[in-house]
Image 1 (cartoon, rainbow, N blue to C red):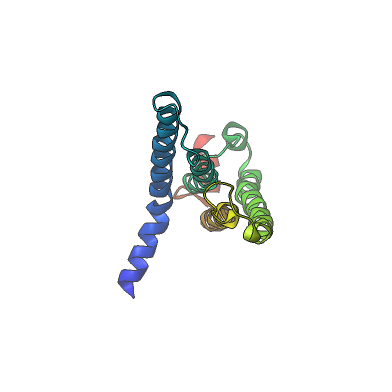
Image 2 (cartoon, rainbow, N blue to C red; image 1 turned 90 degrees about the vertical axis):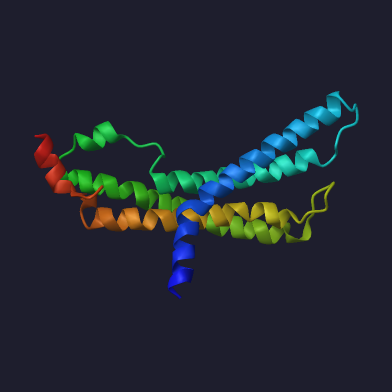
Length: 172
């Protein structure tokens, strides 16, 4: 049981970023093959566009989840840092809560889209479109998963190992 927990923890910690790297490599090789086939072989591989599109869609949603995990999304840090401690905590809590709400919408709408696409296939490869649409709820669920600990720590008043109120006192 402990080994399974360790594997799951490692997969959640680094698996998404590793998958993003693999997807980016697949997109690069796929598009390179597409260009090679068109201009060197003078016959275009018909499948390369669908592979690139599917990989790119997955890369967008998994990359967004990885960015949420790293806290790399847009934020107004200068404005938040200038606030008094009681407002700072509320402002810092607003960010993960907004991400959680947005991600929940992605999960719900993505699930509906995935069910809608269950009867459709891609034109060339006959791949179920629902596989491509599944990126939306999976990415949304991962964003929620990565935002919950941030929201919890902020709710408890802790930011990057320090108490939020202590940060304001140190800077003044």
